[in-house]
Image 1 (cartoon, rainbow, N blue to C red):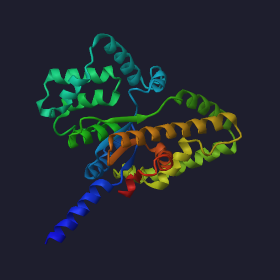
Image 2: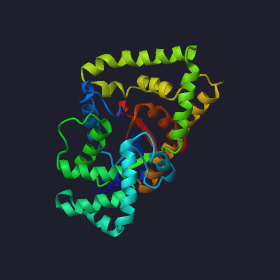
Image 3: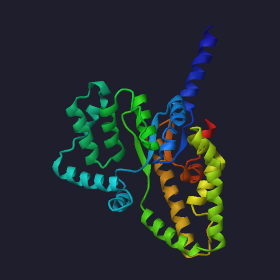
Length: 312
């Protein structure tokens, strides 16, 4: 009997100290049309069953000053407004880390209206975009999350999942330091390809994607097909400009900037996973980044197991 108990203890010890860190990559579409408003549901159900320790999102990290230098005048009006608001809060609010840590240690149901205000001001001060809005979400939808679709897959998935699992934080990991340069060269590359065989390749790729999406969109399975490897590879080729003329300087630079972003994005993910010792992580990210992120994570962090959502 003693030998059996000893064997069980050894197994438990080995599992606890030998569990490989892993991350699941979930492809999303960001803002979706009405016909796809419930496409997040099967993704949410499967993600909940996975029970991740940490939830990562496609947002610039609070201390990434180079990304915010672009984003303060970048593509997103919402991010522009948040940046300006953060600057205002830095001038008017006295941030106290110990106070924030204390408030985050409380159960959600114990937080008062004033507590929520202090938490959100603290995250605004830190320029922590996902958690500033996560705690607004908790305040509005505790305890079960929203019911009516918001037609934004990252919103539907990350915040609702974090609340359901009782997570106190959502983690940003994106890098947009060179996004301005990427779009500049992408635009020039697109113009240079007009009327060429490369333009026809682009249309062929877009048509393949469209044909793969028609039926799943009708039956509410778009989120599933969007996570199939073949679909991800087509998106990587299209959004990553892999079909373009490599001899064209603008096209080559656009491809390089796309790859650079994935490289730094992967570094941010792996570094945070290791620093926080997360065993099971999940990332909700635009589908076109999945292939590149998997490749970079495997190169930079070979000890972290990378799992595609379709492999769960």
